[in-house]
Length: 105
View 1 (cartoon, rainbow, N blue to C red):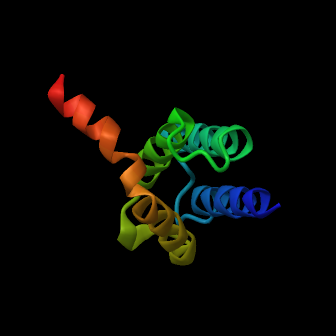
View 2: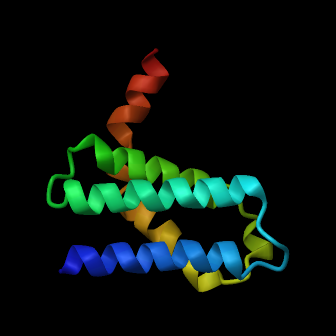
View 3: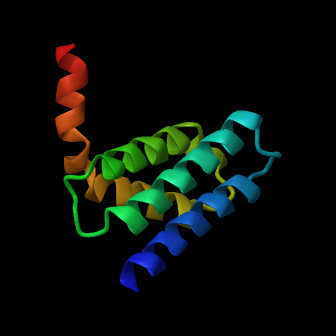
């Protein structure tokens, strides 16, 4: 149940950023939001409790790409941005192995 609540909270934060901005969301932001939401749901529902599963690194990469599309000074909901950024930062160690592989290739 905790995983479901966490997933819902993160997906709500993504929606709030997408919809609460000072300007309408671009198609790139909408695509990135959809991808991040799908990847997070897959990780929480199919890989919960298994941090080594590739679904988690995919979800964090998608979420990070979504966050990177935003200018922090122009965010309509800074609390949602902080929550998403905190989640990525707290789980950054899941990205580290894939980052080393990318740099090596």
